Length: 571
Image (cartoon, rainbow, N blue to C red; front, side):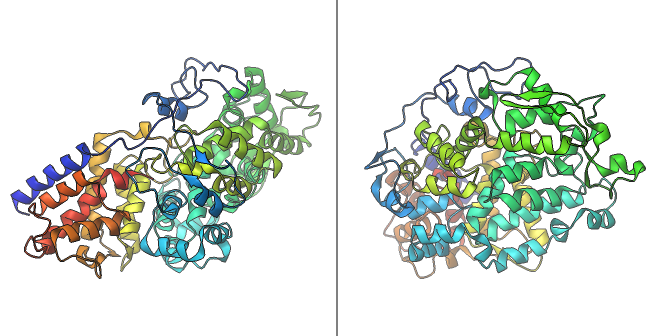
């Protein structure tokens, strides 16, 4: 590449970044729980939230400053349908994104990134019709995603098959699963389902790859997360606490009545259900761990002939007996044989607790609305959760009928993995002659940016707020990825030439070419300052012939720069 092009590109990047307004807006956070009580964080644990915040992401989000959020302008906060909410809500928050088409906002939040075909589909079906379809994912044919998934056979394998396929304790199956999950994010037509799979995989985080999951990670994600992603959280929680992957990861498999391990009992309260603002005590944590004793994995008990290797078993000989009390749950827990039933009753109590409803509702609002979401929306989602018996679909129904969702255009930033996937989707990357190799390249791009699919090592899952992802190195990695997807550098996948992406659109002049590329990749034009920077990259004359300006070889750079812009960074 000529040196002048590289220099011009650097100038253009500077103009695009420097001329943009703030990418997101932050809102004031009240450092109290939903009961109005100030929460004090525990000392001595760097993974815990800072004092004054109910969780890690709130702490991150508030670190950027305290700016009051604009009031929602709508005739009501909860509409009869999502379509009515979209039409009846006025976007007043400052944003660089266009605000006249709610379909663009919906497809940025409820999918891993809009594509021209997807936007047309939502317009054709209507917002309500498309959402109804997405909430019934099994009825949506998904041939391209199925093709991508099939390239990773261990992603569908059961534990015996995995043990017969790879060397013991190797990470091959776990790595395959992460790659297969990314392939579905890129190509699936069941996009809302994939978004919720990612949401719950972070909520009930078992690192993949990670300790103890070498032969059971695929089963964990398929049988616990994917099986319940749009169903009942109560069912998901019960399944999670009977799965070898979670039991091994948090050492519950080694917990016995004589030597109780508190890891799972503590994280069940703090991260998976009620949260620290519920006011539980160390005695509650201890009793939570007592209740879960006896839940183990058969490879720890196989010398006694208990089950096949890596199967969940309940071993009454390991169960602690005696009265237990956690918050308002109490039980005599009198017999070891009855310990499994006591545990399941405890889990369903926690799943239906009002504090769990608040915790999950807030996390969903952070994912879908803003880093510090409005409390009235959180309360509405929590009530839908409780009224429906912990239904995920009921929460999503209320979310999309809420004005706060539609008013929040531009208020979330894509995390690195989402940026990697959205870029692959918008340029039309498709399976080619070596899907495994190509998807491995996309996965490595996410890994280099610090966001390996399903790979967060701690129990609290990847953060979902912009302040947690501020990194010059990560940004440069994403810019390099943009060049790779535009240039077709991921071997094994098929792609469109940059000029083909704007085929049929006005491209005769430099100005037309720049505007068409922005419309194709962003569904909107650049603001005047950034548009001038791109035109300057092509010589500075908007009326000049695009062919004479060199778009046949500079078009690659222009498309990459459009993806590098703050517009594309927004979710």
